[in-house]
Amino acid sequence: MRWRLHLKSYKQRFKFFFLILCLTVFHNEYFVYWYDSMKWPSVSCLQLENQQCQRILIVSDPQILGLHEVFGWIAYTDSDWYLQKSFYYALRYINPDVIIFLGDLMDEGSTSTNDEYKFYKTRFSKIFDTSQFQSKIIYLPGDNDIGGEGTDHVTQNKMERFNSNFPSQTENILGNTQFVVVNRIIGDFSLPTVSTIKDKYRIVLSHIPLTFIPGIFSREVMNKLKPNAIFSAHDHRIAMATTRQNDSHFFQVDNFTEDSAVIKKQLNDEDCTEVIWPTCSYRMGVEKSGYGFATIGDDGLMEFGVLWIHSRFWTLHIYLIVIASFLGLFVCLKYLKHFSFKMRKQPSISC
Image (cartoon, rainbow, N blue to C red; front, side):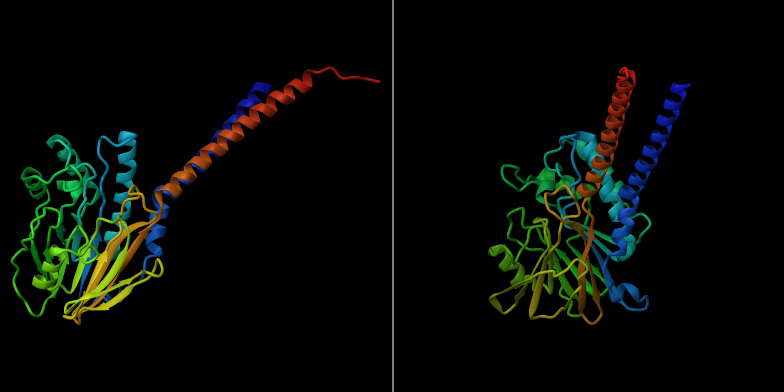
């Protein structure tokens, strides 16, 4: 009879543990992504359907993990899920006209074999699924995609492989905005020939920051392309600076003051604002990750900010706490059961 009571007790504990574990999984894998989106900033252009503006979603340094990552498929499966769920909400929040991938799409893209590259491309397309949207997509190569950092050199084969898998044009004109792609990685100071359109705002796209790293290439971009704004990546952290077309010494660094901040800048021919967008991956060694967004109205008012995502390490810690707590509880119950059994077996001492 007693063993039946013990069995019933263990079943009840197992059901309780299973319920808590299910709630933890729901919280960590679904609820937190929705909750992130509830905290994202409100932008006037996104709220008014009749307001004309360009809606831009920026995906910076996703660096989907490779097959040679520590912990293998466990690591890249977890990272893929984080990127896929967060991108799903970001895509529907912005409903973008343009999606810009600012390079470093893969962590091992430059060093991978052709078969590995195909596998990474298949995963990338599944993670960043835009099939239900009519957005224009612009891809930039990063040093992890084509080389260019340390002893990992850029080659023509790497460039061709990237362009065949992620086709994109150097110049893209959408609405009131002209997007121009430049590549600082390859070491070629020649710039693309683009059409001069007076009524369009020009945004230069570069994986490597430009005005933050002064040099010949940066000066050529500023003098010849005369951008109204620059979007760049690579550093994994958010940063912003303003330069002036007619004053090479002017360089003003600004900061995002809070998570829900929306920065407003009036695009003009005198100033150029460069924004370095943060990575959207939690595996890049930074505290915060997120997707960038920007809207450009017909009057040239650019509103931009970051759709911040929760820390994946925080939710992984929740798993560890829940599992460790129940293991500790199980061990304690086993010890108490053993201790009570020994106490009952001891003979009583009477006076």
